[in-house]
Length: 630
Image 1 (cartoon, rainbow, N blue to C red):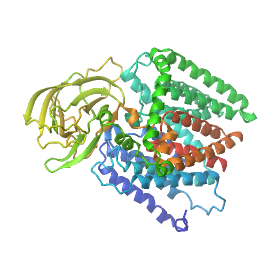
Image 2 (cartoon, rainbow, N blue to C red):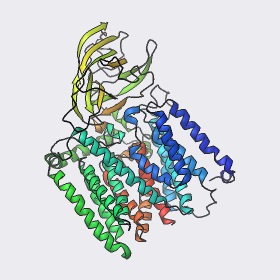
Image 3 (cartoon, one colour):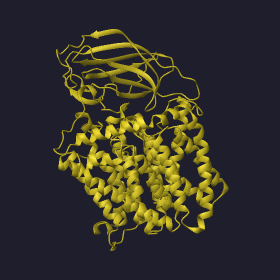
Image 4 (spheres, rainbow, N blue to C red):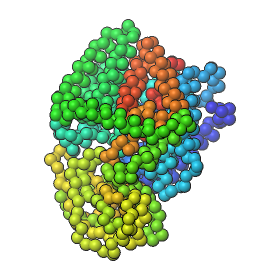
């Protein structure tokens, strides 16, 4: 902390959370989903942090998978999790006494984190150079150059939390224990969300069906291994709670949550997730056995946890879908290896890109422009038109959908209307209603045109590329569409209105409406004048959005410098965690096992290409520094 901040009076120090609260209040005014309830929740969180500052880490860890409203709000750049971090870190900073100057030599962990920050800064500059135009969807478009800012803020939050962690630890607070408790609470919420999803789309004991859960993590909409990663990372902290002597009810609660977590992981049908959880349990058990005073208890609980997890895993692995997944392991690995080879070939031999990368958060756009026109995935843009204002342009491609969750009566008939234009009258626009949470669709219904108003779009002869201009003629389409039936029972399934352009030219949409017999409009922001609020993008072509390898993803965007800095941080954090575990600290063993789980999933998925999981990775590597100072 700078000398100016150290010398600030208490009244001036509380001006910082006041400013943060004002910024959050301004942000809440335009938030599209329950802004009042969200604001009250943020006030309660800040009050808890003011009362017990170390609870900041409990709240952050629990909110990381659970405080995710993107499926309803459409906000992905500055969301409710950022609002929680801004307000709660400002309150915690004001609540703590001024920091004393630290005259100790910087540790290896500090140096490694500094190098990674430098690498991220270079990646940020490269992504935003030259400075891009501030487009209408600059802060809602997954391929926008400003995606670098979306990822870079995670490093800023990690730096703030790390500084607070060292100050809290110096004041005697158990920071890592609070963080671990938050991950356990987040794990419990994630398991509950998985059970609800299974009850809605499948049966709890149906292991033959092909439905794969996505959980509460909205980043799953573009594919990825985030849910299995979080479950595997949080499990060692659950085991740390289980190892500690305590009341019988706590042991029973930990046992029940361990069984439920194993079930939730198994129904992701992720082979990498299975390996990560197995390794996490083994590493935690091995690290806990390093001290004599906990050896017997750790051995008993380690064997018990292995037996419980194996008992849950066996019926799932015996199911036909899991068996088919295991049988295609070699083929899927071959697909990934070809994808990795294609990515490296796209990188070429440019020495600057090899050393520093192409820019933070730029892989998806990089992959799009290095893919043949006929094989490109779909995309979307917001553009301005003098006649209609903002409109949605769906790029030509496949396996890309712009969706909105709508509240409908199962089996009821609705009037669907939309206005579109295109450069080719043969364009293939699909508008339908699907039972879908984030990834898999259960049932879809597509209406049939019953009336066409205005004029049909003109055809641009010989124009078939995705960047063909649209004509100025608009076509208004009216359909009757029936909502999907309720399904086999149990819990209701969410329904999404889905827009998909499967043609070869872009399609412009200026207005979408869905009205029931009661005359009530079901679509929010159907004219797109509020940007992408209420709308989310989903894709079935996951390789277009991820390198499917953590180290390869870092290499593409940050180069060899970024890879070296990340590995240095990981090794420094693992060394600190192992040292703490050798001294008998269960939280040290949990951190070491969590890093092993994260790295295992990172062998087959990028993970750090979304802000929350980049923050999770950084905290797992940095928090062992607080343990070492205890």
